[in-house]
Amino acid sequence: MTTTLSVIGVGYLGAVHAAAMAELGHDVIGLDIDADRIAALQAGIPPFHEPGFTEILQRGLDSGRLRFTTDYADLAHAEVHFLGLGTPQKADGLGADLSHLEAAVASLTEVLPVREGAPTLVVGKSTVPAGTARRLAERLAPVDGAYLLWNPEFLREGFAVKDTLEPDRLVYGVHEPGTPAAEQAVAQLDAVYARILEREAPRLVMGYEAAELVKASANAFLATKISFINAVSEMCEATGADVTDVARAIGMDERIGGKFLRAGVGFGGGCLPKDIRAFMASAEENGVGEALSFLREVDAVNERRRTRVVDLAAEMLGDLEGRRITVLGAAFKPNSDDTRDSPALDVACRLRAAGALVTVTDPEALGNAERSLGDLVQLVPGTDEALHGAELTVLLTEWDEFKDLDPVRTASLVSAPRMLDGRNVLTPQEWREAGWEIRSLGRAAVPQTKAPQASLLVGV
Ligand code: UDX
Image 1 (cartoon, rainbow, N blue to C red):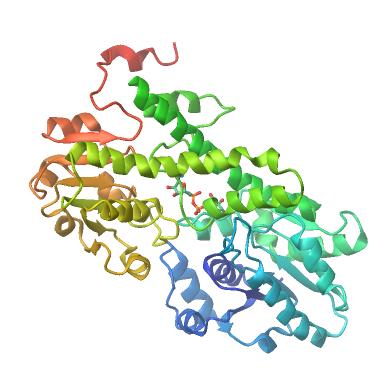
Image 2 (image 1 turned 60 degrees about the horizontal axis):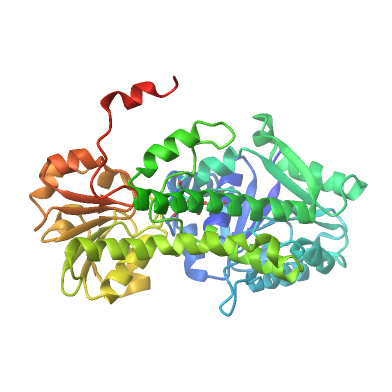
């Protein structure tokens, strides 16, 4: 069944959601107050790098089922409105800035009455502190037939299209589970997601606050898992152990699981860092600040990894002043051009601040890097060119092309074969054999001699 939908706020989440809903067969109109973004999307030009997005955007536009606007009046006849607005960290604190979301709900409230009593569903997808949905629902209450449902989004950049069309679960937060109004809203959203539900994606209905907390806790858990292995990484460095051995072995315990145990320079991006801070701020506001105070430590461990890279670089070079360093990576993770709170860019800035002459390269993120750093560091497209003359190479975003670098060939490009692997993706032995001095986060400077049969004993 085709539904007429709107998606308000077509940033990363909203743009992918809009195109994905058109892909499911719905009539979709995406709205944003950023006219340049709307013009680009309407022309089929994706404003960010996301595998598979260009294709579904173009297919949606070609089919006539997807279009974009800056005018709320164009949304009046939609049956379902998704809220995909950003909730960045507040400029003056740890909490989430909900102003975009609140402004959108206010504008939407003005156009909704046009549908004259027909049921209208408003679906929140943004990550928000617990209590937000209930407050927004009160603002929608005067509009006849409008119901707010909170349906958090769990997509990962780099897998956004797949995560939207094949989510591992759908969470519906409703005003009062089980009431006729809630049941009607659930049925309405089920109809929109029918093709996703057919694939037997679990769908969980709960109260507003639980749905909001699912999202906040999922991200806090992921951040904690990364900082946990990075804390262990500090112990590994102090004791001479290899953190990749530890991570592989503990990850084989099904209760722990091997994912998100990649030790390195830590997490960044537009979600995990700001979401753990917003979660802490929200706990404080709810009078249970202590319950989440460990997240301060999660943040601190993450921050320390960045300092550690700079310290290691100084150890390897003796002095950073005037030394030529090439940083491989600008995006906060591979397969993305997003540089928000990117560990790679942050470390590049710190190296520069310590006096090094820094060159940064990245397959996709140099445009965004330039917008945030200007000419603070040298941005060079092309790995070979960027490596030219490097006295130290620092790998901070694990793009395939960096992981696959050949140590022998790479040695011929740089001025000194020194590598700092900030993501533990290179095989140190291979690089040492090719004449490199290589240091990694969470691995001893000089490898411990391992009994060759040690790996055979795993599982005994
Ligand atoms: C995250 C959540 O995964 C997603 O569910 C939510 O909707 C949005 O936030 P994303 O920001 O796209 O998604 O990135 P993610 O893949 O989670 O990685 C976050 C950061 O953690 C990256 O900087 C990545 O490099 C780092 N990371 C991840 C590690 O350092 N080690 C790991 O083992 C995994």
